[in-house]
View 1 (cartoon, helix red, strand yellow):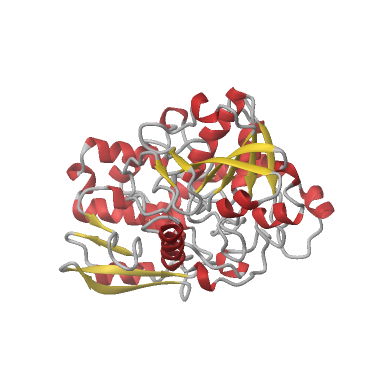
View 2 (tube, rainbow, N blue to C red):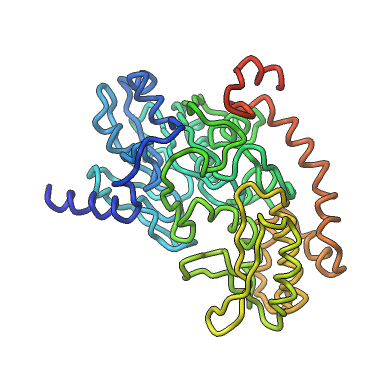
Length: 414
């Protein structure tokens, strides 16, 4: 059994690349928790919501750290979409399993059950969340966190978030909010498509604003050394693929740009290639014309080239993580191009179109596409909601705008 577990540990490290990880500029929530001797969890029976991304700044899995932590009793694990190892395909239901690293039972929170049941939580004093998000509303990891917070509130147990960076940074806030009728697991709360918040900040906001009912007893263990102007490349941390199609630290930006259109029939965004979400291919498209258009968005920081892929000529995107361009505006532009060239809405199944509405947050996108309006018109429509959200989120922010800013200065801004 020990030999088999060693093999699983080695295989996980090889798949994620964490055997070569070095200290970065940022201490993660798990690092800060350890610095404080695990005091918030001492003497408690805990369940940990995590996957392969739940590691400290040196790449050691949080579930192993907590299993060995003095005074902490790690009872069981919970996994979001893609499972505890992050290898299950998108949308695939994952059942209960046994973790190869710790030997603990893993309850799946994706599929038939999205929220921990009272039976799963029986005997626990706290739920701990340590999963790396990508900063886009439609990615389901924050939905899992919010559902677990509801379960914690219903069952009267604590909820602790070990905070982690937003790879898109804390300043980029873009896109539409969610209309109430389109609230779903891919759009769980009324935040812009790109919200610029960490998991801990979202948890604080959701708990205070009634998005989590009943509210839970929430604690956030913040990072040290992270500021809002940092994208992932600034942290010095090694990226671990968050899911099969988010393999690089640059992947979240491409997910924002092509993820919406990639759900529709007749569109290829490179899923299954080495650069998922970096491609854009639809029938009857003139790739050279479109590449020229895209290269004008933020010259030097957004670059589009034409590449052959799967028998067609596709646009291949290269986006600098700190581009000034509005990524959500670029996303709806590509959606419009796909509909004009490939009539993707008329070709898509009702379930695909319904998923588009849920991810976008509104069915109004269809009327906009029918009128062939400019993407800038949508940006203007989003602007009041984005501005209101920025004001509302201010009191929940945990990190400064730039390195060296004091907590007092941050409080004054709020």
